[in-house]
Amino acid sequence: MTARGVGLDVRELTVDSADGARLHVEVYGDASAPAVVLAHGWTCSIRFWDAQIRELAGEYRVIAYDQRGHGRTPASVTCSTDALADDLEAVLAATLGPGEKALLVGHSMGGMTIMAASGRPAVAERAAAVLLCSTGASRLVAEALVLPMRAGGLRTRLTKAVLGARAPLGPVTPVSKAVLKYATMGRGAAPERVAECARIVHACPRGARVAWSHVLAGLELSTEIGELRMPVAVIAGADDRLTPPVHAREIEAALPQSLGLTLLTGVGHMSPVEAPEVVTGKIRELMSGYVVKAGDMQAGDVRPVGAQAADVQAADMEEEVA
Image 1 (cartoon, rainbow, N blue to C red):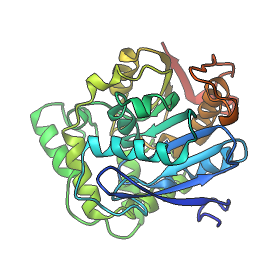
Image 2: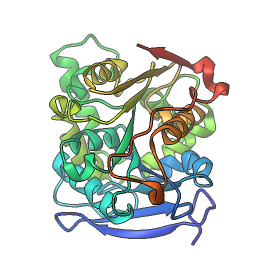
Image 3: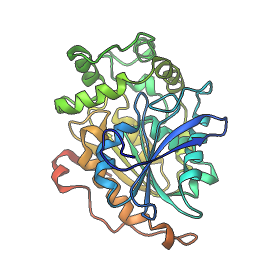
């Protein structure tokens, strides 16, 4: 079967989570290749990762899944960080071989998923390394810069109301694209990338969008950061209004094995779409440094990073933060 959006052969799976939720999963690439698992964010879907899937599927086994209520995964009564962790655990169990480790990559709510699952042995034992993109662990509403107001209780209340609004997003129009770009992307984001994000976000069912906004408003995963004991790299957009760089800096500082923070100048919240070369390059770097083929894996096998920094073409967008 050829997947819509990427034109590549794909193996589609339905994976049952702990509470019976049925997750839509897509697997690209050779079954014996080293694996990378992609977890998307709030209001997005597998299609958010199309640029990474296209570039990586020829080298690696790329595993992506729709979070519950998003894409082709039906909505569930249960919306919680525990449910997100259950879902990731189920996907890893269904797609990785015995003793196999993978690179786990999460954007926004996908990064929160990885943090929520960090203390679970079934997840920690499967993660050779982690890449967290444009995410946060707590105080998401209080720190958000979507509304141009002074920080404080009023801004927090209004931001929570805006992000949790039940109004339908409606069709993609020039006005809706402009609003989406302001809230989620950098000023210089290419029009085609804005349109791509708009199509994905507007396709998210209203019920799932609202339900998960409430979960994110009360998010508290600060303690779980310290449970990420594998090597972890962090990427953030300097112009991110939804999860500003303060979150990335706090996460990076609390990591037991930090590989550093890459701050992307001129990039907003949608880093894998806005700066695909950088994100894909960082995935390649981590794959070459930490993930081995399933057939070569031995218990406790860990390899040091051997790759250089991310794609040179995007070097002018990056600032490495110690």
